[in-house]
Image 1 (cartoon, rainbow, N blue to C red):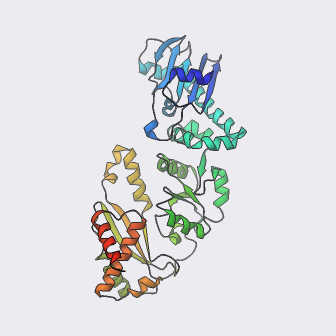
Image 2: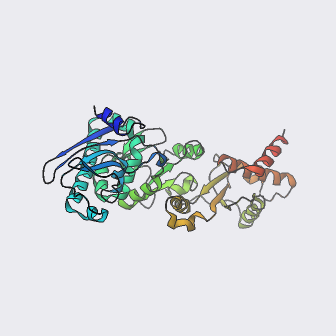
Image 3: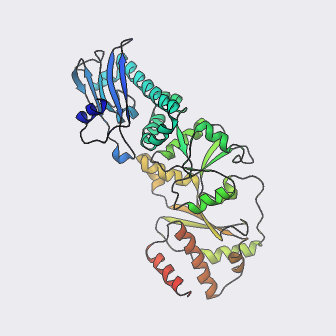
Length: 379
């Protein structure tokens, strides 16, 4: 019956995930039903789908400012004789009963989610991809919701396993605490394009989270702010030894002159790419690591991602993407290029650079065409 009523209200929507029944007699009177719609991206988000009534007299379906922002994503009907009629929005927002109703609905939603989590964890995990954007939006915009939601917020690792925040802390605390006592959560945003970095981290015995949601960047910052000595670092933001520093870094065996010559050799062959800047660096990463590792600074990348969500941060959005092209001084191919000046060595440098760009999805257009032609010439 509840689903049939939902279809009557929203005939073009998919079946809801579940519903919450509201029935309060004191200290205010409230009846209603709220539905959790299936939402996987901001494209699907439709606010103002809750219809507000007073004694079955329609008041409004524009409830922003009357209830917390994340509740406007729910669908349903609310009826209360304690909601004043024929008043302005500002009066509704400041009305004491409306505030009590708003707080009650927030608590009811959180309690219902916690109940589902506790009673059927598997079903909750199956619904998580649809619930995630709603819950993250809630904890980002409503402090009281965070206090309750931190018990059932889930995070998923690159292998598809779910953890609550406490479970994941216990999982990685011993292996992913750096030499300064900071707990480091490694994460990826794309399993395919960041596959090499994920595997490198896993080979070190680390676990990698998958944070590919539209609100994951601000959510990460929220968790960092509420957790002592905890930080999130994307797996491609630095070489693996620097992501979770455990001890002093291995020293580079090359002399300063050799390092300068090697940097110059690679810098001269870097392709010119719009809104991208590359800085050639040299580190000792071990013989078995890749000859070149391309990384992107965590702070600057986060600021640019936040700029897409917040117009006031457009300054960061206009800045070029900055990458570090880290040469592995321990790798055979890099060692062979020390002091090299021949045309053949320049072609090798171009090939190594293009391979690193290609593996990160950055080689396009003319540069990609040149790489393909140069690769054919090797046969």
